[in-house]
Image 1 (tube, rainbow, N blue to C red):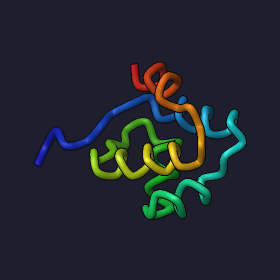
Image 2: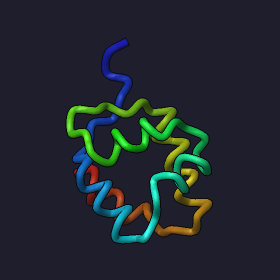
Image 3: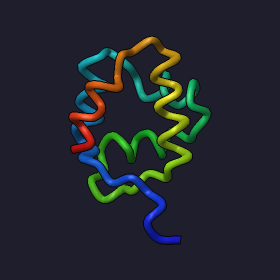
Image 4: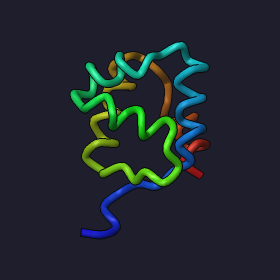
Length: 77
């Protein structure tokens, strides 16, 4: 089951969350994922997020009314 994750520059995601004033707990509750998962997404450069987890997270950000699509594309490059 290799290649199921999305590798991205995780530290940029964490900085983006901080810049927007979000907390990891908000995302955790809204996305229904574990807090360690969100923490790893924000800080661990070797962490590979599963597509299902990333989908949950992106929906949570969307429901929190953040226009993240344009900005997140810059992060993932």
